[in-house]
Amino acid sequence: MHVRPRRVRSASVVMVAASALAVSSCGGESVRFGGEDVANAEEVLASADDAFDGVVQAGVSAGTTTVSDDSRCYFREAGEDGVDRTAFCGPVRRIGGNADEAWLPVPLAADGSTEDGLRLTVAATETSELTAVDSGELFRPDGGEPVAADSLDEPQAPEAPFADRAVALPLNQSGVDAEFEQLEQPYTLITPSVTVTVQAAATLDAVPADVVDQVSESGESSSTVGGTGAAEESDDTATGEPSVPFYRPAEGQQVQAWQVTFGPPPEIAPAEDDQYFGFGGGSAEPRDASTSFALAAGNQRLTVRGNLDMGTGMEVDTLGVGCDEVPCQTNEQQQYLLLASMAEDASPSLVATVDGADQSLSLDDGTLTSDVSQVAYDRERLSQQVSTTWPNKTIVVRTEEQLDKEVEDAVFFDDITYNYGGAVQQVFLSPFDYAKGWAPSGKAWLTVPIINRPDDLSSGELSLDEAATMTLKVGDQRIAAQSGAGRDSWAVFQVNDTFTKGTVVYRPTGSVSVYDQNYPLKTDEPLTLDVALPAAE
Image 1: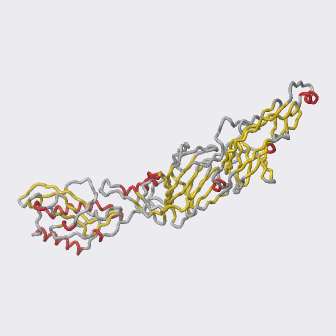
Image 2: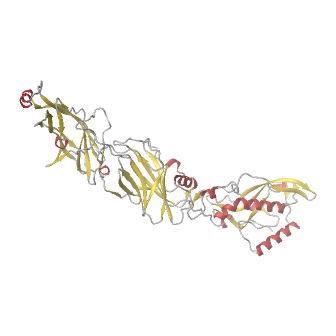
């Protein structure tokens, strides 16, 4: 009596099987192998049945492999010499397999002869791959016939061994072959260090095993969620059962994927250059413009595991782009697959955090939620060439004669003068300033970098009122330069994000201290620059 571990037979079925064996041993169909009669045809098929059971048992238990109660091993007719040197066992279906390939080949070998004929044995095999066979050529000495492969239940993928997890993988290494739907209009998320574009989306009913491995490795653990773990499913050392090719989402979870491009940030500030040098009391500390990503799903905020290869020096396993200060490094585009397992009713959003402020991009419809400046989304260009050179001018703060009269016990040999001027080659409309960080929602920074600004006081101590020295005239409004914004050589103004035209007025204003005497620094000859930027489309 032969009871297979993959199924439990009723007592009546076992009795029938035993009777069939008895009949075949007393005069069933004869079998020849290599031109000789086989003495143990039913016995060798029973051994092949056992080998077949051992190969498929793990998959049957997991539901990834299905067989029939009548799946078993058969000889195949091979002409005048008898049967093929391979028995075929099945039918069997495996998840991800070809429906036509339903038979496991089991090699046979001669094992000596007796007076009753040649004895056969099941030879060792290193493969568990299924093959296609014409079932009409298969037979058993007891008269048993194979059942149709399409009568077997469809195998079910095991549950993915993770839930509430997000990961970004290089697109060409992701292994996901899904039917992505191209978005009618790509979704965009812009930060000072990177531009993110979402081009296509897909809902995955099955997650490839290699993706499961990468997602599990990227998290803190790969513990099973409501099913058998990946390590158990893919361990084929003992059983010969092939690794599971894919998994279904964990119970109560949906798995979505997006094709995403990470590209260069917009040009929002001038590159550092020796032409820009300080004036007016020292540079402010830069704000960190690095971007970190998370995926918001329902009431959860999932860390996105992965590492962008964008030359930023970030060596962490969470998705992000490093940037110590603006302007950030310009990098080539990188295409990634963003994949997330989350609650079935969750609506996902990609969240980019810079300098403590979030921007949230709905991955359902592309809606952007943000409390910071969105000027980078509204303008095709955020910079404008101006190529203006101001001639150097001189302010006489005090003449030598005036000083000799006004400062006791001091001898002066020249006038006290202040030189001003410089050049502007480009202006920028920016959501994020070098020193101030984000502009508020509805606002932007107008950055005017001045090249070769002399800032030359011949004698004494200068106290420059930068807010009064640099102003921006917009219509009837006069806007003062921001104190502590930008680098030393930049004039920075906070403007409405709809700004298109204005006039920069450079009128040195402040005071000069000489031997405890304070003298005003002022001029009636300001330098001006007309600024015009394209309007939002």
